[in-house]
Amino acid sequence: MRALHAPLGEPASQVEIDLDSEPASGWRWIDVMCIDDSIDDLLELAEEMGLDRLGMIDAIDDGDLPKVDDFDDHLLVVLHGLSEHEIVTYQVSCFLTPTDLVTVRRNASPAIDALWDHVQRTVDLSTERPDELLARLADVLTQRHMSVVEVFDRSVDDLIEDALAAEPSLIADLTTMRSELARVRRVVYPQREALDVLRRSPSPLISASGQRRFADVFDLASRTSQGFDAARTALAEVLDAYRGAEARKATEVTKVLTVYAAIMLPLSLIAGIFGMNFSNLPGLQNDRG
Image: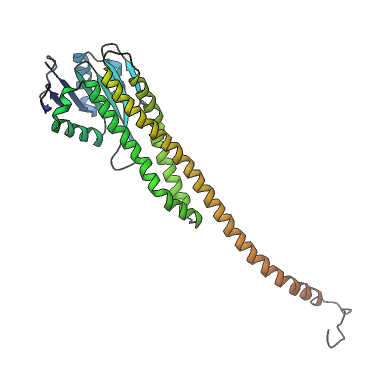
């Protein structure tokens, strides 16, 4: 568990977590990496900060799709990020209060680490509100989803070349890629809907500037979802091209076999007639026969 405090006009710095006193100015960000033996501490944290207990239990269970729950005095925003070394998503549960942002996760998060370091280096961020910080976090998480589409776009040309050459390994590659895209696509649409709720939220916890930031992230999430749809269509087109190339190869083989059959059929007919074993075979007494 770690905490940042950003007084107005000053850089954010790591502080000891003191739940008995709220920051006099600025905001506080508490980031919790949840492990099995910290569950009781998290429930105690939720009680001391007035956070919804069931919401915290959901955060610990790590099984929710992106969503927004409004508890009047605080919001629970569930977002999903992308792991660093494999195409797997993970849950980040964000509790937003007027002065605090609490993020709870079970996995390492390169997006949170990058934003955490950036916040400590940038003085301007201390003038913002916790909801704007949450919008920045949603932006970083969504950008990593978009990176999957960008990587796919760069590999499409190679896939098409393999498809036109009917490479046998292409089917396995397409199956793996389709599975990875589906894994991320599963959370892309709910995350876009959650961002849509936040940009329109009437909650006093979301300021006008926060709504504008969430609107920008919603646009990014919309482009990401469109990119995943385009990637899915491209995979289907590559598979069709592969099947067409295979059919062309099969046609060429059939042509060769047909030529051989055309040559061998007359010979087989002659051998079949004159190879029969009876004495009245036509031409048997003829020298030319």
